[in-house]
Amino acid sequence: MQKMRQRTARRRAAAGSAARAARAAAAVLLGGLAAFAAAAAAPRAARAQSGSLATTFAGAHGQHGTMFDLTASRDLTVTGFAVHTATANDYRIRVYWKVGSYAGFESQNGAWTLLGQQHVTGLGQGAETAVGVGGLGLLAGQTYGLYVVNGDSVDAKSGRENLIHSDTLEAFANADLSLTPGVGVDFGTNGFNGSTVSPRTWNGRVHYESGLGRATTLAVAVPEPGTAALLAPAGFAALLGASASAAARRRRRAGS
Image (tube, rainbow, N blue to C red; front, side, top):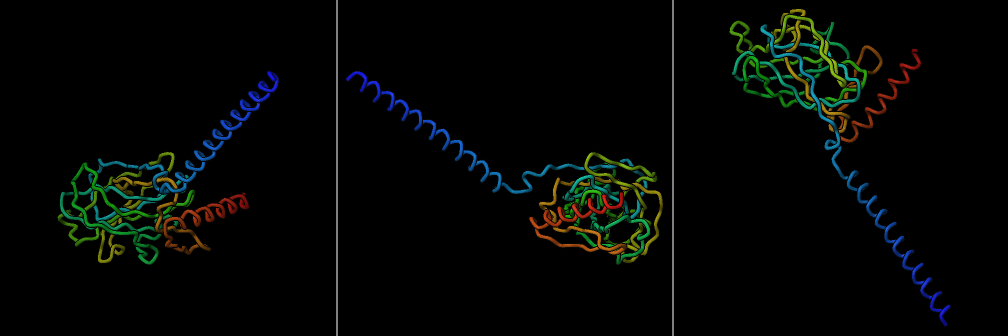
């Protein structure tokens, strides 16, 4: 009788241990599923790392705009800019871009695409004036020409519409992005038929985030020297960027 009671107690203890183990396993599984669901539901932008690359805000020369080059070391999305205005007046900042360097295309308006424009009130010399124009996807290793210009009325003599740049040739870079200086540009009548002055280093800041999750414009090169601008909604941009980056890596390996 005693042995029977002992066997029954052992069976109950084993059943209790198995039940506790099952509950623990279920908790781990449910916790893992919940974590996965939360990560999948989190916005892509929330997981992206933000950064910026600034040049200088100590320049003393002004023109309506500046052209320069950007090259990303990993896929990035430009989220905005800051410019250096000559005065605290109204500006209409336009941002143009092209695949490949600006050099040789200073007066070829057909080679450039308008990323966006915004009216801002300048904060004057020595200060950063924010410009909320962004969405450009930069593929790792690809150089892009940028042109930041005040597109309001033209009055170069008063300097009221000028953006400040430096009369030097100074490159800037961090772990994600490099900026190669270029030329100062007078707006002319359409932004591309005014005079240019070289060398000039753009005074400003480029804001960006890692990845292409929020890119609305993704530019990839097609058979040289042409380019194609792909307007992609958020989500598709990352897929397009991954494909383009893989193709670029294959081309580099083939050429090595």
